[in-house]
Amino acid sequence: MYGFISAYPDGVIDNKYYTISRESISPLSDAYTEAEFEKLFASAKKTLTAKALLATEQRIPGVGNGVTQDILFNAGIHPKQKVIDLSDGQKGVLFKSLKDTLMAMTSGRGRDTQTDLYGNEGGYKTILSSKTWKNPCPRCGSVIVKEAYLGGSVYYCPECQKIRKI
Ligand SMILES: [Zn+2]
Image 1: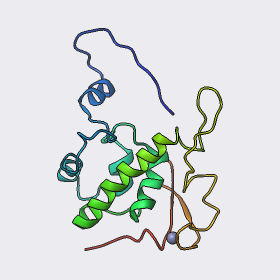
Image 2: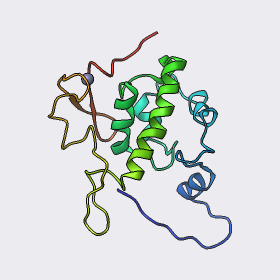
Image 3: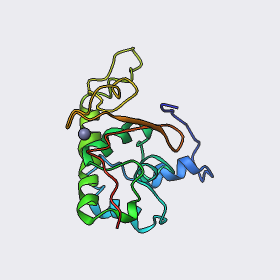
């Protein structure tokens, strides 16, 4: 699923997606602060990983599997990193990467792996995707790893995105 528009009548609607999106703050908004992002960690289970945090359960509106790859790459964080083991510094870097990466994708009118309603590719050059993962890591030249994980593929650089354990 790439996206959809749902129209609802006025009044109380018992729909999980409607309720979540009404109550969520866009990560592109200035109102989405680091303190807001921190709340995700406070409610996280011990087993929650970085990909799960970003791309499942609609914790951050608009963020899914596709955009998660570049957010984690830019932050230098492994998709299977347990978020409980992230340092405060890494959380700060992840927050900044979330904002900066989404902003770059938005200002580029989307990723180049997708097309708009008129068939035009987005202007954002996707770093890690099914089209690019066979290229060497753009930062260190290592071979990018592709794995199936949590309902979709993850792509990561084993050198730039090492798992941190406490
Ligand atoms: Zn690398």
